[in-house]
Image (tube, rainbow, N blue to C red; front, side, top):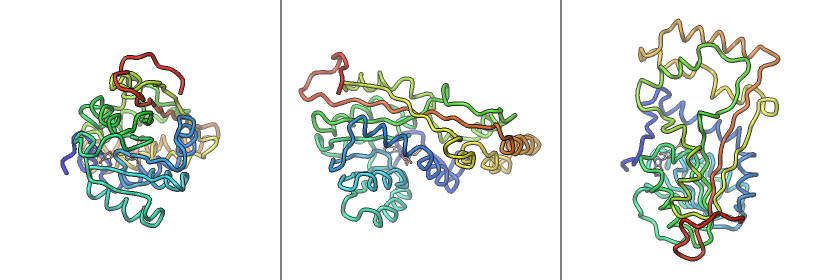
Amino acid sequence: MQPAGFYDPERGYLGVTAELARLEAQVQVSWPQEERLLRAIGLGDGMGVLEVGCGPGFFTERLLTAFPSARVTATDVRDDFLHLARRRLRRVAPGRCRLLATSIADRSLDPDQFDFAIARFVLQHLRDPGAAAGEIRRLLRPGGVAAVIEVDMGVWGLVQPRIGGLDELYARAGRRGTDPGGNRLIARRLWRTLRQAGFTEVRLDAFVYHSDELGLDAFAHHLDPGHLFPAVTAGCVALTDYVQAKVAYEQFRNDPDAFVLLLGFVASGARPRTGGEAGAEPGAR
Ligand SMILES: C[S@@+](CC[C@H](N)C(=O)[O-])C[C@H]1O[C@@H](n2cnc3c(N)ncnc32)[C@H](O)[C@@H]1O
């Protein structure tokens, strides 16, 4: 399938294998917070759930396990990720999960089907996140709820003490090709994106995860400069800068006061029960 966006780990500095490890680690650190918020927003067991851009299925697995009667339709544009997801999810929930190779840009699914829809770290990669939000609204039944999980690098969190040289190293490595992170300032715009797509009862929630609870190791996939070694071999990062950042990271890991606090965002909204409610004032669900 042709991706309708920017997600392209082959061209990014990580490569596909490291990207898979990053996705798995990312679900592991923040799933409990995300689950709590999803439940608060209205996700319940027994629902028909659409997951847009499921990737290799790490998040899908959590969904199917935490909601043992949910029926999940998970979509993606990458055949290789869908293949991995299929292998993973066959074990977890045979018969409760449908995997489809389709782009959210394609309007290929029947409308009015789902009770709840989730797009996690997907809209940041799309050329037209507003159109994707509109398509998600079309796929929900009236009254169904969408949750868009995203980041915003303007308010990403705190790392203390700072790891000298790491920001610059990531910036240089990112210039190698397509940034696998896409528009990483997207969360600040999601409330209006959902509103403009015709959702009501729109809200924006944040979740926090912290190394005091999870341990510093859980954040290595975010912080360890070791991931950037491919950018050194590709010649976009100087070996001396890389080594300097590695040393700074080791100092950080050995500092008993070191901590990491990261923020994620969930924008959510409901498809109006009756037509023509776009532009109405938000209310409580
Ligand atoms: C950063 S990964 C996130 C995967 C998964 N949602 C997670 O949180 O682990 C982004 C995923 O979105 C998929 N994607 C990109 N454009 C898409 C589109 N137009 N329609 C559906 N999925 C898309 C990519 O193939 C990739 O699997």
